[in-house]
Structures are given as C-alpha cells and as structure tokens.
Length: 119
Image 1 (spheres, one colour):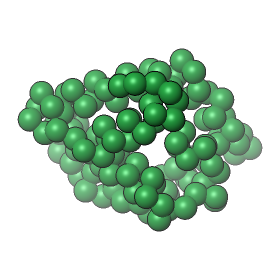
Image 2 (tube, helix red, strand yellow):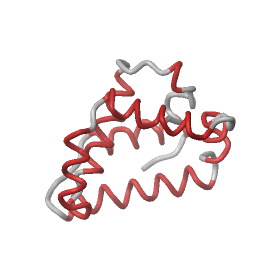
Image 3 (spheres, rainbow, N blue to C red):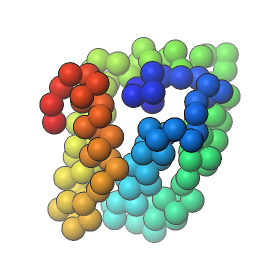
C-alpha cells in the first residue's frame, strides 16, 4: 500500500498494474511451503477482488479509526524497514525451497527505488 500512497480502499484502482503486482506477490507469499495446505488454498483463493475485499473488511472493522491514515503513520520508518526485511527473508526462504518468486522481489525493488534504498 505504501507504493500506492496509502489510499483509502474506496479510492484504490483494483485494475492498476501495481495492485495486480501486489496481489501476485501476496499469492506468492501465501503459497510458501511453510504455510502448508492452508496457505496453498488461501493463495488459490487470492485475486485482486478478494484481496480488496479483505483490506476493505479490515478498514470497515477498524472504524471509526481511519485505517489508511493509521497505516501511513504506523508502517512508516522502523516498521517499513522491518517489513522489508521480512519480505527479503521470505524471498530467501522461497529460493532455498527451490521456488523462486517473481512478483515479490519486483514489488520490493520498486519500494526500495521509491524510498531511495537499494536491495
């Protein structure tokens, strides 16, 4: 969501290339072998609309808190770096497991480029 500028879900373009790439990355991560059959089934059920509905549901549940504003604040700085480190670990896990990822590293590369960091 950081690459999209932390939009409110009602303002998100579900057909954008970036949302589609993000959805593909979520599918990749959910399908890692460490999540077993439940992860595979969840990955199989993940698409642009289902992910949008997941996030929209969380935003609705969080009301009256504005989840987009909260995420913009909370996921900046330290938490953003921790999340990137976690994604790097997932990429390595997948490589070590013989299942290299494609969407996830590309999404991370774009984020690091936006933030002015290197992989």
